[in-house]
Every structure is written in structure tokens, then in C-alpha cells.
Length: 532
Image 1 (cartoon, rainbow, N blue to C red):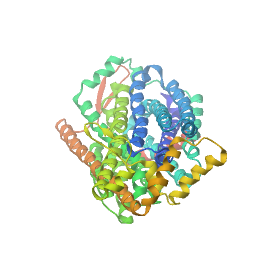
Image 2 (image 1 turned 60 degrees about the vertical axis):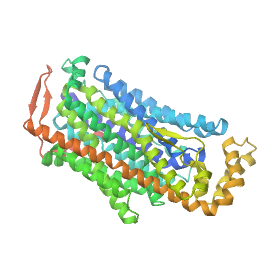
Image 3 (image 1 turned 90 degrees about the vertical axis):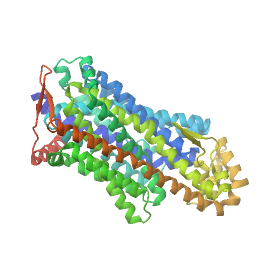
Image 4 (image 1 turned 135 degrees about the vertical axis):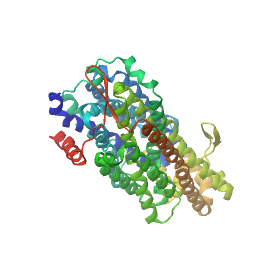
């Protein structure tokens, strides 16, 4: 173990940087959704499907990679992830020339697959870093997994600040590709440093023995709850900047960065909190705050109250994901990377299949119904050409993002649209069919009703975002009931205990908890030594 202890700070830092890269890409992507909508004409549902596709790939890869992580080793998988992070940037930034050459459908595929490959890289990282950190800091798994996952909001902060500073001022391709910087950093560390074997491999556990853990009803119940965690945290984060920007113009990025800062700071103190109230108590409190914050955010209008709501929501979501991973690591160590990968995978799949598209659908449904009921003629002018459906819910025609973007643009719709049109004219280039079509529509229809359409369209867009947040608050409310069931279960078993395995794979129950002072000191050591 001595060789592992000697460089575990560096391995922790490399793992932390993978989440910085993932968070940066995620945050900047959220900031350019509006630009993608205006440039390429996507509806909210289509944008949600693009972001959801990224999370979907993330979840699938975590599950698949976790099957082989313990046997192949941590290092090779992280090196593949590094290559894919670079490749995803190249594919994503190709969207604009593809749009100009081929049109919207091909652009959608380019963005979708660029995000998908980015998610594959993130999924490979996630399949490694959770069991790796649980392995090298086995005495404080929940605490160190929370510290590790402070890298995610750390990346969101960096990406959010970059977005606030340069999105809309430079080509969107520049900020979207900046996650290459932390990717190069972690790639260098991975190439240079030795990695330990996993506890499961050292104990000689087979894949069959690891899979046997899924016979536990407790693990299956934890997986169900973690699917809800993925929906409410990552699904909402896909949209939060876009929605809050419509509520408080010019403050969406700052609210996002603020919520991420809360997560970043608090995750370093999970150890002392768990010491006092145990993981399940922490999760119960988190879901109450998450429910309250989301519903309040979807209800209030005053700027000050919006900031209060974001504060409550930010605190509420802080500990959910890493603490759930910590519980699985502490209760099912014989599952190795497979059980932890299943948790991460189910959370990402839920966010990708349900969270991103579902919240986009709720916005389209509520915005369209609101506009249709009060201003049917305006809705007819701004509704999308095709209907979108979600699961078994009725199909709806959302608002056409390109038309709405031209109407609501602060610089004036004619200036924006004709500016794009003029650029192609001046360059002698072929005008993309979508821009030609949009200009013809504006000249023949949009411009005539601009004065009467702008206010109801803007109001409908805000209304759709608010209602989507209110409906989403039901998810953490349901999670609270799930955690109460777990509290009752563990009390019936004599209280929450951790499970450890020895070198022969035998399990041992322990009540050991490090002191609050010890966890804080070790938390600081885990990252500062890794930067040396």
C-alpha cells in the first residue's frame, strides 16, 4: 500500500481534473443553447435531446466500462478517455460549417454526436475515478468522494465564468472547446503516474461474484433513488442557465456560477457533516431543500427571491450524488467498480433519457399551451413545424427557437437576421436554406406582427420555464420518502455501518468514523499534494 499512498494525492488530482473538464464542457454548453437555438432553429425539445444524448452516452459507458475496470486497470481506460475528449471537441466545433453546407438536420447530428463522444469520455473517467478514490482512500470513502466530486461544480464555475465573459462576444466554438485545457493536464498525469490494483482484483473476486451484489434489494432500491438524483441534479442543470436567463435577463450565468460555488465549497465539508448526522440524514435534509428550492425558483418573480431560491436549491443538490456513491462503496465493496459504475450509469441514463428531454418537453408544453390559450394567432406564427413527444405524454408543437430568437433579440430582429443574410451576400456564398426561409418568413409575416407578438412570446417562454421547475420539484420530494424508508431499514438492522473486505474477500462490519478535524486536514492534503 505504501507505493499507493506515496502518489495518491496526484491520482486524486488527476481524477479531480477529469471532473473539471466535464463540468466546463457541461456549463459552457448550457450557455450556448440559446445561440444554437437562434442559429440553427432548434426547439427546446431538440436542444434537450442534444444535451440528453450527451448524458445518455455518459451513462451507458459508465456501466460498460465498469465491467472491465477492475481487470483491465485504471490507467488504460483514462488514456482512452483523454483521446476521446480531444476528438469530441473537433466534432462539435464542425457544426457551423456543416450547417452552412448541408443544413439543420446534419447540424443536429454533428452536435448530438459531438456531445455523445464527450459523454463517452466522461463516462470512462467516471467508471475509473469513483472506485479509484474509494480504493486509495478506503478509510474515508464518503468524505473523499464528496471532495472528488467538488471537481464537477469547480468545472461548472470555470465554464460558467467563461460563458459570462465570452459567450455571445466570440464564436461559440471557442468557449465550448476550452475543456481541452484540463483534459491535457489530467492526460499528462495519467501518462506519468503508476496506478494501484483495485481491492476487488487484489481479493481475487470474479465478475460473477461482483454481479451477485445486485441480488440485494437494498442495492436495487439505491439504484432507483439514484435515477431520481440524476434527473433532478443533472437534468435540471442542463436547463437551469437557460431558464433563469429568461427569468432574470443577464443573470442566468451568474446564478449558475453561484449555485455551483455553493456545491464546490460545501463538498469539502461532507466528512464533518456525515460525522454528525450520518449519510442518510444528510440525504433527507438535502431532498427537503432541493424540493423547496426548485418550487420556489419556479414561483418567485422578484430578483432577490430568485437568488434565495437558487441558494436553497444549490445547497439541496450538493451532497446527493457523491454521498449516494459513498453509501454504495461503503455497503457493497465486493461489487468493486461494477456496483459504483451502475450507480453512476443509472443516474446519467435517467438524466439523459428523462431529465434533459423531459424538462425540455415540460417547457414546450407549458409555453405552447400558455401562448395558444391567450394568443392563438401568435402561436400559429411561432410554433414549430413538427410535433415532439415524450414517453406516453401527448405530443406538442413547441415554439420555433430560430423564430423566437429573431423576435426577442435585444439588438433588433431585422438587424440580426439581415446581418446574417448580408454576410453571405457580401461573401458571395450560398445562403443556407434555413436562413433564406427565415428571412422570407420574417419579411412576409414576422415583421408585420412584431409589436404585438413580442410580449406574449416572451411571457410564454418564461412561463414554460417556471412551470417546468415547479413540476420537477416533485422528484426530490419522492426521493425524501425513499430516504425515510432507508432510515427505518437501517435502524431495524442496528444502525448504519460500513462494510470492508480483506485480501481474501471476506466482509467485516465497522462503525469507524474519522473525526471532523481529521477529515478536513486529509481533504486539504488530498488535493494540495496532488498539484506538486
